[in-house]
Amino acid sequence: MASRPLVHPREIHFLNHPPRRSVSGEKNERAAPNQECAGPTAQERRLPMDPHLTPILSLFPGAGILDRGFTLEGFCVLRGPDTLLGGDVRDFHIHAGVVTGIIAGPPCQDFSSARRSPPSGHGVAMLNETHRIIEEAQPQWFLVENVPAVPNIAVRGYDVHRFNLLASEFGCMQRRNRAFQFGYRTGKPLAIYSPGQSHFGRMRPAAIANDRTSTIADLAELQGLPRTFRIPIISRAAQARAIGNGLPVPVAQEIARAIYQRDERAHLKTCACGCGRVTSGPSRQKCFSAACRKRLQRKRDATSIATQSRN
Image (cartoon, helix red, strand yellow):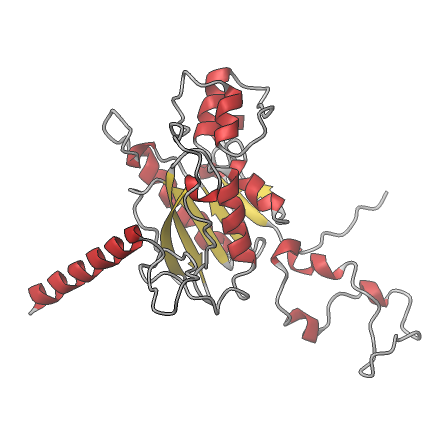
């Protein structure tokens, strides 16, 4: 049996392309029988690609919680290697142009305020691997998720929008604060719709990797997963680590929506502190919240001190 020819991902969305039409808009009935398989025209190749129709790569996927948020919003996510299943990202390589975007949640233990031992250097090493793969893949955009103290990622050719989000802003019963770095070649930073603080009364402790008291069902619920969520091939402790290390699904979904709708949201007014949250109040409102006003003031103070030191 003859093998099927490989198709480049950039041409996937042309496989089911409708019959070509003439300039007048009528179907070209005299087209050759195999014309639909002839590939895109030069004009079609210049059209912007729908990010839902081209794959994105997930690095350090773990339990796939970040992936789940993007999948629920219609993205096609390719899972990269992960230690959970015996993979090693250091052995992974990818050709440029194969994926449109990269999402990554590298190990955070070295940067976490909850660690009880000196940094091992593994966190920085995995950030370097993330940087290497981004440079190899040359995607249109990338998203790196980690704890607030994670170092900045700078990749040549990309602007980077750094911001923090709380899980409680998106309906979760935990405050869990995560930092995001969104790199992009063209366009504007992300505009995030934040519903604001969830009102559950007393918040529950944030889901963490070394939780030994909560049940797997409770941890899954905190992260926005079904209570029946399980990873059957690994131990209970490994499941807790994988779930606790993940990003809550509702947060991942909003970021996925913001990436998909980035052009549509480009005209929206966002917080002056740079957090990306959309402000919908009166025109004079510059900041989303009191915390944003304090963050903006700290930036101004730092700028003022730097200016005075140069003078």
